[in-house]
Structure formats: C-alpha cells, structure tokens
View 1 (cartoon, rainbow, N blue to C red):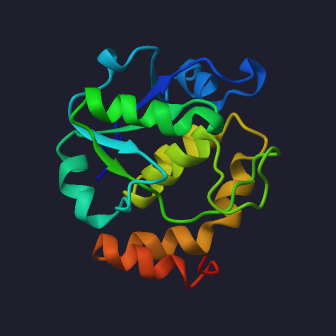
View 2 (cartoon, rainbow, N blue to C red):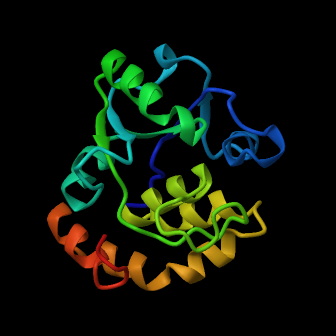
Length: 177
C-alpha cells in the first residue's frame, strides 16, 4: 500500500486563484490538473457530494490496481450542472466522502464543506496513504489542523471493512442530518 493514489482534478476556473487549493496541489506535484473533461482518467472515482455511495474499503481493490481519484474544482453554485456534465462524458464511478471537519478558513468547522485539497487528502487517508495525505496538505496553513481535527474519524474510517460501515461510523463523530 505504499504506492500513491493517482490524483486528478478537473479545474473549471470558477474560483479565486489566490485561494485555489487545487492549483497549489498541482504546483507541488500532488495532483494533475485538467481544464477539460476529456483529459480526465478513464478509470477511477469522481468525488460527487450527491453520489449516494461513500468512498471506502470496497473501492480499495480498484485503487490498488491504479484507479484514480478525480476531484472537481468549481464553484459550489455550479456544482450540480458541472457534475452532470462530467458523469455524462466519463466512465468514472461517483463517490461521496464520509464527513470530516474542514480546517480551511472559508469553511472552518462546517462538516463536509472541504476544500479540494482537504477532500483529496481525505481520500488518500481513507485508502491508507497517510504519507500522501500529509504531503498534499503540507503547503497549507490549515493542513496540519485538518489532520488533527479529523484524526479520530480518519482512523475509524481506515478500520472499516465495507463502505456501508464507513457510513455508519461517521455518525459516531457527527450528528445525523
């Protein structure tokens, strides 16, 4: 499990470039940026908050065989239409993330409102690649705080045997909606 999970980001240039965590991840070599869906990987998982299936242990086999995690960096206002377009033009399997507390200054403490870097690092951590998660977050002032805030949930998610168990485990740390 020492191999890094391939991380790709479809970047739609809809946010403030100064606050864009996706660009920073690309600049430090932790993610590949795509400005067009056609450049995205053909095999892997697309992070989609409305997917209905959480990323977890059931996905490890595909990840261990080289499948990528693909994030979408866009405005929350355009998320639904952007997501539909990507899913209609790729074979990526949609996955949502279990809850985690963001440490970024824009959404601090609002469960589930992660920056792109936090979301991608959470994926790596869930898949057992903590070194990769730490490297991804190193350039951000909030990076270490994110890992500390979520140390217990991340450890619990890593111990789960199925994706369904991950869903149930998150409610040990966060209130049900």
